[in-house]
Image 1 (tube, chains in turn red, purple):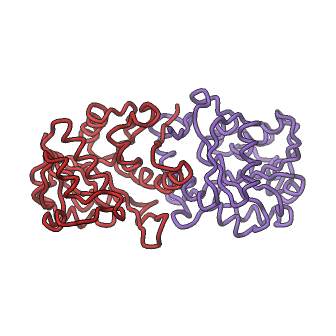
Image 2: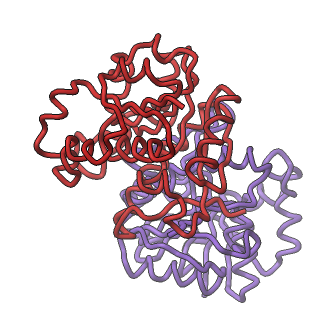
Image 3: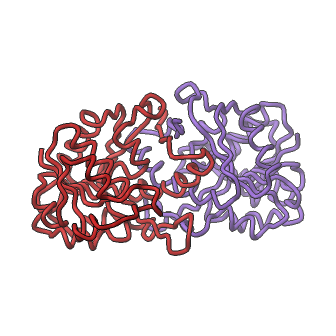
Length: 228
Length: 228
């Protein structure tokens, strides 16, 4: 399948690399390809390598401006930082998202007051709902935002994969597509369909607990399981 | 131990009944004992029996006004609705809470716009922190708010007890006391100490997801496990 992954940070790279390794035709989207390739320091304060280094070892992943990447994808992942998500999708272009399943992995984290971040939207709204409202013809499905990038595509790396992922979205068929991707491509064993996109509020509001757990557990190698 | 449980709804009754069955000297606190005993319809729209009925089958649990109950307890559970928590604790009296471990089980749920409720405080503050600020001499520990009353005291009733509870509070020794209560009295097998009371934000912000799951899973017989 032709897949666009918007965002070149840890989440975008991990998703693009995994999808490409599964044989898909993946284009990763960025604001300015030349500027990205010229970067000598990677994101997260240099904890990730510069993109050009990552790209060299993931040569099958194409790199393109947001609009070109989105146009190329039959399916689009939003793996951008929540603070730029709406602007990035505007750059990608409503027409390039229309009718497509848009997998929203982002979180509305506000780091302006330092760490831990607060949420820039929550409780009575969610970033996913804002995306859906801004791009009414996209078929937005919220998922994967509750866990670390490495766990997203290798759930078996934590507790043998015995934990849970959620999907939420207003389009039932789109939720089904994303559930299949999670189970068949990434190996998730327990995917709970939470229904319409208002459920994204709860999925995004779990981040403060996740961030605290990351500190207490000395790293992000964990996930939530719904015991029942 | 002499224990006060403030609140006579599902959570207060369940905690008081369990603690009493363990041999503790339990006083349940309410605003007006006579009015409570005279009620002919129980809370939750009558889904719970009137308090007098519950009391007749839990005769070892004493019933007293908030202040008298709090004064009687060496340990105090706040099992009131979040919308009245601060007023109830004011009635209980700062002097009757000073120096005591105050186990905060409440959630700041706002039902004014119907179901599902939103949170009346979140993101940059929590109800637990508001309680601690209003009663600086109480040793507030947030716990148990993330699950159903029945699961709180019988974690083994869900998935054989293989799931997680959190504690958060500014007083490390108080967190230790509450952790022991959870493990030794109620049977919790996995209690994660999240540290100071700002972690209560995340614990309270999990409620929207919990409420959605309750709908999707057709009832509250589930809990979060931190797979790691």
